[in-house]
Length: 279
Image 1 (cartoon, rainbow, N blue to C red):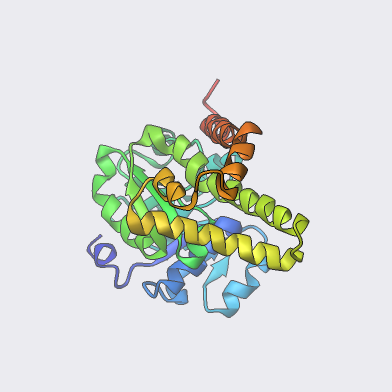
Image 2 (tube, rainbow, N blue to C red):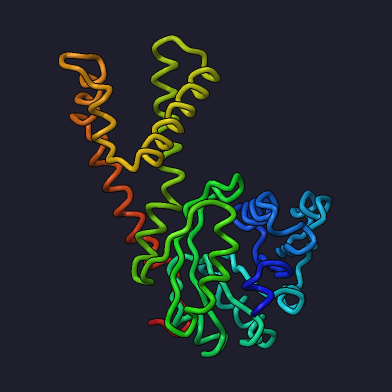
């Protein structure tokens, strides 16, 4: 694991080249920490990976070969596909060499270990599609056996955005807030753009204006390390247009709807994975 810790010659295998897997591949290359040749991607229908292949990524459908040729294994498959994949690659996993990273919602480290063995370092990671542009919020969790592997995984995902270490029981809530959250904020931007369209802007103009405004709001909070209400107070004046709009949105349930959506997604994320041994 010394090479992986140094991050110089570490080879990644992303098993499951769907939207998230491809986004991770693109993001780690853009981070300049991994050239395409050291980021292998697999999926059943390899033709969907032609663009990555043209960029220099090794691609294929053989997951066992990908494991043999890599050090950090990032699993990016749906919950219903996880058990089959783990059973397939388990014979190739070496506890002295490999780190297994799972992005699969709801699958506990205990459930993963039941299929790959007790000695394999297993880390759960919950990035979001922001990895593609190196703006992800990635949550990481490990059990005591895998503590040493957290530094390795943090090195990978630290190049594609921010990371935070959390307890494993917080992974389902993290899925809702950070992974599902991309869709929630995009829906809010879409709604703002639709409002802009209604008050006179062309659709493309409204989307650009809404998206940039949302980006500015987020950057403001991160730069100032402040609470949203602190920044809101700076743009609300007595009897002004901002407070009028905010009050109308609150009266129509804006905040409560977003809160309930996050809670609902968290509950669903917790039950998405069921191993064959579960009742």
